[in-house]
Length: 302
Image (cartoon, rainbow, N blue to C red; front, top):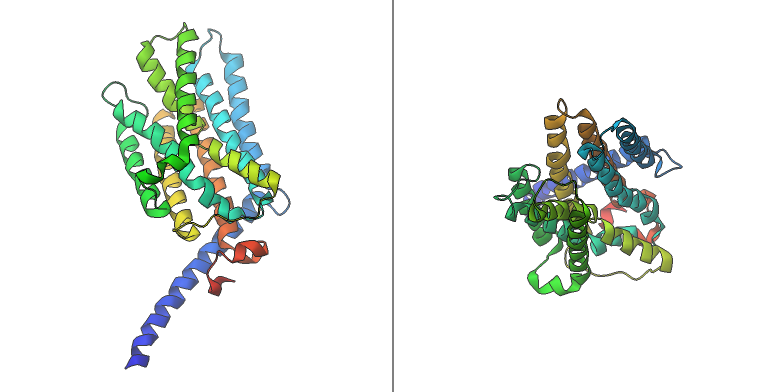
């Protein structure tokens, strides 16, 4: 009977491993189709170029000055630049997979900061879709706890995130003080701009850590309780689900009213999707990874 019991278990394991292998192959084929074999930033560079052209067009067409769509598109361009940097530099690190473990918690905490600000100020003013902000806050908290084993006791290790949040709030206050064309109250304007600035800075911890590791050629690994496979699933599940709500839903609502703003949302979502596909392809395809990465993957994958 033991042999009969072990047969279904082996079948389940085979199917599980087969689905993982199929997912890895899909991610790699998509990455090759989007990037080709020689350039990692051709597509991201084109997306940033499209967004920049939209900013220039709105600048030339803005006769009155202070077009909010132009400002929004400019912020989209600034927010896209860290993702382009990460796609260019992350493979220069000795162990790219470990980088997700290092910067994943900080990036998620930055998202939790501006989403928490949006939700807390929901009665005062609505930034984006209130329900989507609430769902996003719940999702990012779940990703932090389930994927990265984050707890309040470990918050002290992320003091740099608190500094970035304060930097965003301080910059927002300074912007609103000198912006004499703003028709909002100072409090509402500061809250709104703070959420935008913190969102723009969301991937700065990842940029800083990747730059430092690539510069120092640091091969040391940080050991985390959660597996990198679990972290990748939690990180990108939140990232894609949130930006579907943040970008695609917003683009649908704005398409007829402001097509340029809708296009900016779509271009940003495409870059986030490309970043997710790019990193997942290199995490889940052991044949294309340097030897130091393979020890992170299950034995049956290598």
